[in-house]
Length: 353
Image (cartoon, rainbow, N blue to C red; front, side, top):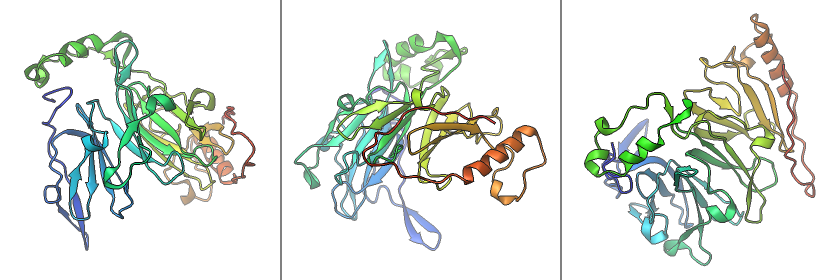
């Protein structure tokens, strides 16, 4: 357990593996200046200063974020210097994105918020105008841009989801979804306000007893308008999942010129905005963001991991045959460019098998 809810430093060491080639790696974290023992939950790398060397951003739970500048042979921690390591929060994820299309990375850090109880707010660290190189500084514009509140936030990723040339943002959330009518927040807050001796011993934490803690939360899909604002369109485009989300990855899975979202949930179906990857789960749906920003739902193919491996539909249940037919329909889709002067649509279109 952490020894503090704000400045915990008992989270264990970090590991950085240097590729030696020939299938061998060497652990070099302390050798190159990374000696943190915070509760890290995410690390992302990007060349923030144009030096040709990727810098390292670490999102920490129970504390401040860390930013390491890469000087070629060693890293140096510059979190406070750059502004990202000032206020302690509950960092769950970090993602880089050039949200202004001007060759500068911003970083989005997810934290914890619960209406009426705890408002940490997520961070959108944007480079301050006029700062660069070793003098680079960031300011948090999450509230200004409309991406501050996302519940108990976890995985988030940037991607151009409506093909308008700007990066949008997909956020997963929700911690523990059990009894909708009973909450663990009161007991949680009692322990969180204690000293390190109380916090650090699990026997002092009351049992959950089937209660929820920030459960059944709606996911966020923020579209970037290109002018400094993000608008949540999740519900209108079919992102209605309320499972306990942990991570999201964006990729063009069917080579159609549009991004799909693969969402990993705890104790629930794993989805490609619905495509079930968890064989224990009931049938889910596939959700695809079309060039017109429409999510189209079809039954997932849960009968075979690689449908291309067979030349004919599987001889099994009708549900699986329908899924196979849906896959064949997907293969016929082609990406059609959207006129530049046409606004992205957020209408919802559904299809079932």
